[in-house]
Length: 300
Ligand code: A3P
Image (cartoon, rainbow, N blue to C red):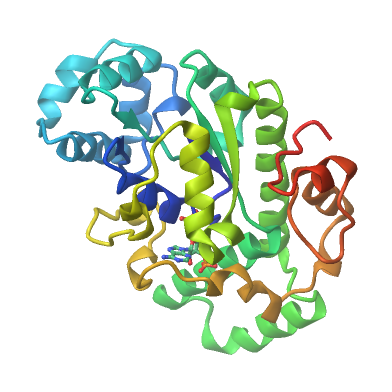
């Protein structure tokens, strides 16, 4: 299970791992958020596409009707068991859905299945910057705000050092989601989870994926370093801009520095960054994170 805040590079990591011969990695499933298949079908209809895609990836295409017939009336845990029974011998399902980090109930529900958890962490200002740019692009597409209002918006951004209401909300969400993940993963045995930092993933992908595969107990396969953009990309089930990258691009690791400075972050954000091993020249490492540069300092 791949857990993260949205805009942390989760689509990239999903697609990379999906290139591994033992991993099936469809778009965001959202299934764990719901106690039953029927509730998921009723409330998150668009995510059904991910389940259909999964069967294509497994080489056993199924119609919506066939999947519905097999899963109707089952709890989501039963559906995961059923999916896992369809995987080839030694096969693994990667369920990447950032929304799982929103509430503890979802995380606790997942524990019954004893999955391996990957916690993907990106610098909060990387997430904020990515989110703000995405929102602006959406507004431009919808011709909002009115051109005349743009100077006001830009002046506001300057006055707040970039931390407009939208940016601040995203910072708050980053803290909430990563606090949930930290709290939850502290109770999970070390052999059952790993941390990946987005900045390492894009700067030193061979090392990051080598370590991750070893942690999961998988042989490293070079194909994971060649994420393909041919896969299905529904903008509601992953990064809408994934196809714009040619290969693994290190630029997004530091792009936020052009627009923000860490001094704009709240104290609680800076504190959490220290606790979960987000690297930053401004923050002194905690004893735990200094001992463990891979950022596994969950008990701080
Ligand atoms: P930016 O908007 O800062 O570029 P998620 O999939 O969790 O929503 O994360 C989206 C972020 O992952 C985006 O950040 C995007 O650029 C980055 N990303 C996607 N594909 C990438 C690639 N091939 N190389 C580097 N970063 C990538």
